[in-house]
Length: 406
Ligand SMILES: Cc1ncc(COP(=O)(O)O)c(C=O)c1O
Image 1 (cartoon, rainbow, N blue to C red):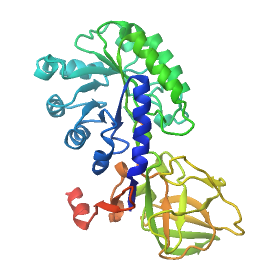
Image 2: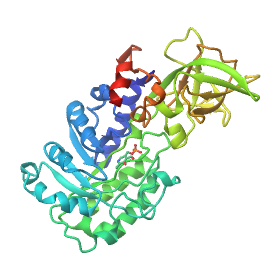
Image 3: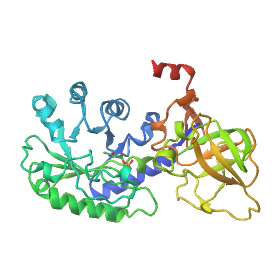
Image 4: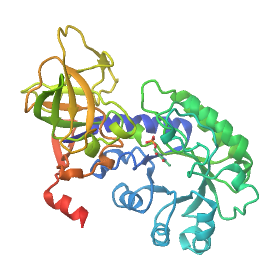
């Protein structure tokens, strides 16, 4: 079961609202990171709207968030553009060729003529600050965003915004150096009267306890003053971080070549693919029998000594002490993929069939990426309300598997 804590979501959006208000900017949910729309009514009051990666996310925002929609996609087709023009508020383009292809029909659209729809370009400041190439849109030859040399001399009539997204799980000093690169390469555009908004993308880890929010606030304010633009932030992860867990059941336990193995009813590749793709290692908690949804007992991982509980408002660390002997298991899923493994984890006792394990931080970039590979049953989705009530908002059946495939 994917279990999302409403209280934890509210904690995050309250931090985002406070930060955006202090900075004088807009903040929207990047739905690519979290789009469990049944939770939208609990967060929409604090956010200015949604960021959409294309038509379907924009429709989800229109139907369930009902606020401002900022849309950016690496490419649109004609049918998508025609629909988007009717309801998105920002429409950002990834290349000049896309903009030139569609701009004539945009110029004639009543929402563009009335100023209800604004168009922008995604720029590439060619300034890498992250560690992982797969998440770096500034690598040479990147397909994401327009470089300054591509823009030189181009006819930019009709555009009013610039958009960059270059960060991933980063702190505000990286934004500061990025803004310097943006200023060097695109500052002349932002200073002109034509450009009225600057979208600084996502990747800002604003709700992490160590994040330097003061610096973000200063940077946004300076940008607003320097360029006289409206600034937009579109975090995904910062909205949903530490808000959700994936509860799994141990289906089998056995040994192979000296390794203890536990097969779970959830899969790394089908239900938490970033564990393999990113890759990252989620914290795991063992729920002792009798305990219900919360709180799970902290388990020990091999790489550290302390962990935080999902949803804990202070991101409190729980030191693991007085554990005499550990029982280490390779946790894997029920699919055919040999590498369908979450990792090796140690527990204070032997695991047995029926044990419940809780994987931390499974709300963002997890639920949005699940599949039914191997026909493995998709975990139900539930909301944990502040009064402890668990509301199952979606259960999956054989028909869902069938219908997706033909
Ligand atoms: C254009 C754009 N905006 C916003 C985001 C959200 O980023 P994050 O969830 O890291 O805040 C992404 C993530 O890839 C993105 O590509």
